[in-house]
Image (cartoon, rainbow, N blue to C red; front, side, top):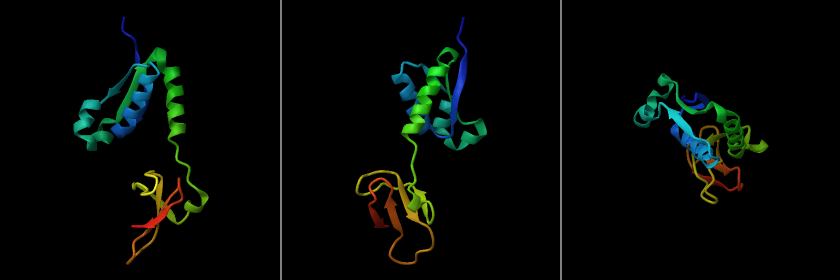
Length: 127
């Protein structure tokens, strides 16, 4: 008799998906990724096919939810109060600590570059 698979979470991109699968595997939970092969070559179709479903056996669901919640807490980004207004999150590495928790100043800049601030080490620079 086969065990029933249930969807734990659905992601749009494979980076989040593979991170969770690795964490589940480390906890001894077998998982499967629905739509993995389609979206590994045609990622722009993610919304059309419903994303990447991380599925686990029904008997492992409670344990998998704990692993997912712990992972979400570990990767949660805290935005400092001084960066909540006037700044926006960007996909840039901090040149000082290599963090990706970087914000740039909003608005129009003609010369001199836009101010960037790392929320982790507080380093600031113009780019």
